[in-house]
Figure 1 (cartoon, rainbow, N blue to C red):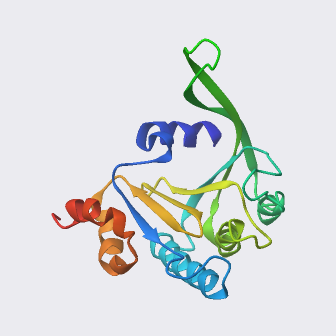
Figure 2 (figure 1 turned 30 degrees about the vertical axis):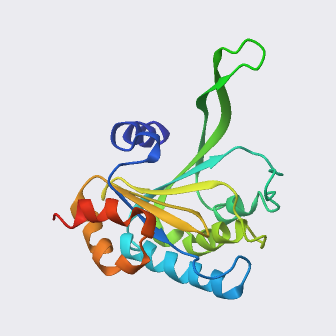
Figure 3 (figure 1 turned 120 degrees about the vertical axis):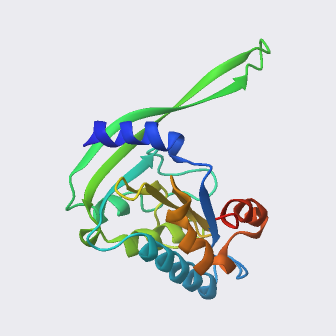
Length: 208
């Protein structure tokens, strides 16, 4: 399973991204920490998620975990929560690296910096995954609420060629290989699109 999905990602969605995507606003205009914001976040992300995936879909869940219990900004106070939610699933693991360039402060030369992280992989029918609790946990993270999920979580359908990522309470990204897969979302949830990217999305989807 592990080799199959990692090869699929490299071939179809390098770095888990695609130029063909939609980005939706989840939390605005409500203030951080308010019940109104959390309620809107959960309502919107659940609606989008259930528009993309159906209960009998087989999906991969790709978890990116730096295994840091206390980060500088927020602190992952419930680092085990995500794994408790997936305790009934078979989880495979791989160690990978984020690679970026930086300047050596002593020599001034450009150096390559590797940051190790763990990838945890699950393959299951969606109906057996508590996705509502996962999405709510991601939304809680930067709001200082518990239980929270600080790991990066990607839901991947190789049958539909779609990746769904809720990055935090601000928004979510939906990547696809074909315009037709995202077109219904573009029309049905157009008023939820992030305004900053609207011209980009219009340039793709209004042509169809």
